[in-house]
Length: 394
Image 1 (cartoon, rainbow, N blue to C red):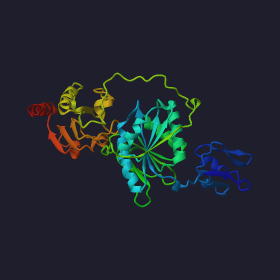
Image 2: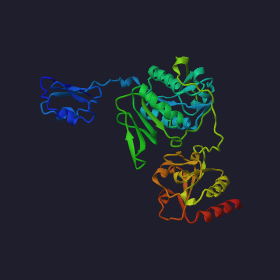
Image 3: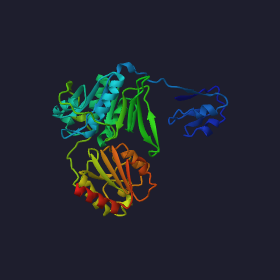
Image 4: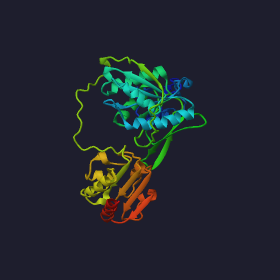
């Protein structure tokens, strides 16, 4: 929106200056003048009693939405290995494509990563666009964004999905801005509206206290980042056939403003919560960091990994890489054991889709019991050793 002063109608009353929240109006002589910092909010036009200020709606760019076809998944890879979230996105992408009546494609960027194309087809892709270039060996914001923007301009996908990983959260907003479209971040649910075939994107809002469903009606492609561990994978089919389309990106060394000199991996113990089938998590109810030694004993006995609530991480009892929840990792294991975790809504949002939830807590009114399949009211320092003893006898 833009605003314009009609000079012959302006009486110099200065009411518009008082009304403007941005101090974007000044008097030149006896006539109001709009300054460069005007945001076009139109408050001044409403305040003017002489109708001396006009507000005009700017013409919006109209895209031919019918030209956009297909559901795309960004096939994030690191050192020639696909990230687990890619298979999850292809599983959900196949459902979305079927509901729309279109194809599912993966866009793969890197150098000497052709071998991943067949793997993507096995996970459900009908087409794989392979962009191979030496400048794409390591992820850079410029290199990947420019490459995928070229792909979007050429092939015009209707929907593009990214994992809400460190790379996905960096790449997706850049591409949304470059493509002049919207982006819904950290989605936990995706579905197609049966009436108009637009994608309905659901994500937690206001600290997880409500779920917002967002649509992008006027721009394409529709873009979403999706939390790892939320969507379900399809069964891998090594016999699936698909189309592999190899494209050479138009990239120059000068296009990439940042250079990766060295990749340094942390030496700390890492945990893969996303892939774990069993997770045993500890919370503030442990009472002390030493309690995680008992949690690890049970996790090892079950063949699982150790998780934690935000309260335990904030207390410095365990590394953030173990955190489960809205501000940590969203997980979907076969078995989730919550020990000394009350069940704050932010934690529940990250684990409530587990196949089976077992809760151990001294407080019988703890919210965790509302989502638990099995609940044990008792002292975890008595319950867990008994569980371990029972497992030893099996």
